[in-house]
Length: 84
Length: 443
Image (cartoon, rainbow over all chains, first blue to last red; front, side):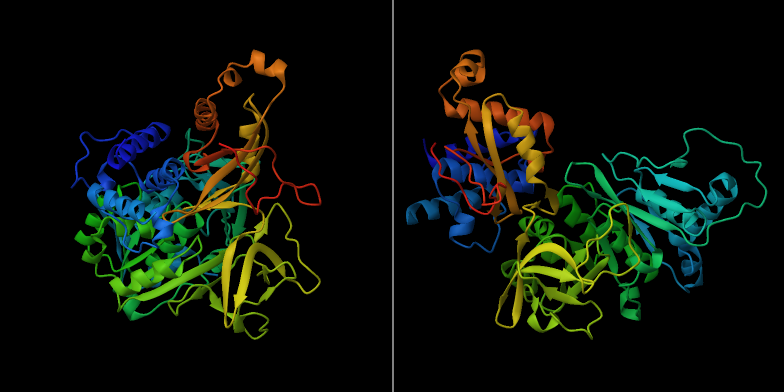
């Protein structure tokens, strides 16, 4: 499964646990805060992805600028994966 | 001390309160408050629980009841009314008789504010208006500010913002309950210049990437440990703003402000008897504070022989700086929401499949901390055969079942974001669960 799909699956899982409805479709320029998850949802997503992928780029790369769009979020994971 | 309504009447100017729907001047709210007093003389010198409602109503109620009732209990949403004898709920459920002539009013009102307790039951702490407003500053510059309200005004931090705005005659824009993007839009529309929020709320505002549309001059962080990364980021975005982070102990009724833009606080503040707030460090490396006498609580404060209270906040001294490490009690701070591991452990242990559970904090770049759990599964064959949960060998199915159970019994921020299946959970020499380190994991 590619990284983008893994992230989307994890988002779905977190949304179900949080009783949130994700918007459809989530595209590259979709704003994260408009996807249907709140900041706790994103924290849960990052924790879930750490379980699935074995890394947390926000901690490992000490990222200071928080991503705004889905594409930026994905890019952070791609960058961290290539560093692994 | 002069009551709130008299203090506001004395001020030459007054601010306005805005929500997404309306705008109210404080002068109008004062008129409404006097109307409530004259219509409900039966509440004079009584205890009143103010139930959740719009911000304007809360302000009117506080103005009406401070200096009129014996006690005010601020009841946020999802908080049960305190079991206090003779308490009146506000708004009134039924109209009681109003034929009381010139009632004796209470000159000094105690304000009770709940904090979440270990068992999930709220603990109520009583404060005087004087204590609640001790840190409020007045100046011409402060009058010109427009505050954004992101905290629930029924809790300690939100009440501080509300009182600061009211007493400095600044304007207040209520953005509670809105999505972050809408919060920033509404604050930008009304040119909000001062915001007080938890580090997690600040990170959320930064995620909108529109925070720089606000002309911020006063930035305050509180309720969680303020990390250097976030402080640096905010000072870079708003180089001219005053950047402050606050440490407060509700139990002790004290707090202090760090205004140098650096995480932690100066080491010289420890063991300095001339400081307005006396601080010290215990042998266990916990922060000790000397409480003010103005707090009323049903649980007495535990003080050492020199009058200091253990805050249960773990600290570390590195050179000339003291840094906060987290709670010694194991309490987890998820974006400003306190989670008691014991409560989560009880829920986990109520799952048939689990024999032992240990809940602890996991670092999160976004929320400060998140809840994580180690669980030991039951291996009793009898239970295994009768429990459909264990029938499946698939650990992820079990995990999903556990999460479903957690979702039924816990608030969202209390649900473990990471569940590890371990062979055993570690205990410290006194037999208590060791919450400081992770157990051996197999999944």
